Length: 360
Image (cartoon, rainbow, N blue to C red; front, top):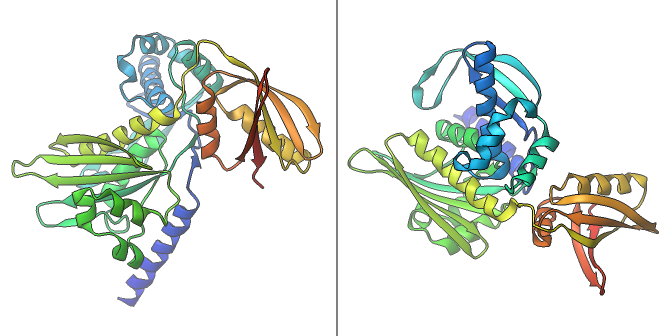
């Protein structure tokens, strides 16, 4: 019993450190997709690459219905042209969620060309969602045939595995409450079940998450899982409902809804006319390494079409930039990162200067 307490305590500490390090996260390998295959034949590989590209387009645009758009058909026809490299691997035997057995599975690992994908999306007026994405805190109340409870990531591995797999596929950083003594004092299952937003937001304040997802899931008398999801962003709320006979599908669709709704805020499309005459002034540039770091960060932002270092003076660097999207989209993207902090803004008749400080 003592050993179990120690292991549980260590797991909680590990989860806490993970939570505190997330906040807005840079999604690694955003343009890589692992797709299951049966053989290594060229015909099947071609079809698998098309499906892998479709999965990538959903992830990068933030739109789970992207396949229904006519622009997507044209992109999928050219799928092979977007591939930088591919290789085969084998996924070892493991138990899938909820007790289903899964055989050894061959996998086609595809790395797509990030620059080419972005250019194609801009050209077709489709949104692009960058690698820096907001973290979402998950409060989920579940009622099964036996009881009603708040999801505890330490005690519901099967459910967590399903949600994590779908969140990873969509490129969504998610974190789970610790469900420690402080959480137990701050929030009850009835708060999440009843959708009491003030209580949910209050209990979430200890966690560094930009978004909060509240879920209520139950098994109805007819054997169907019903789910009501609420995305909380400050004072804004977005609600959607899902039902199905398979809990896995209901959980996966919940993650799809989360990604779709968050992407509306952060994914941006190209504007008709690129915004020119715009400058970004960055302070606290202490040395050449700081300047390189700031430059690479700006170059990584998909909202910026062109960038030119115009001037360096003392501890400040000024960049001349041209935007693909609206200025507000750039500001939202920068606000998620840990590189720049907004300072003051200066304007004159010819141009706007956005002012930021480099976070050390």
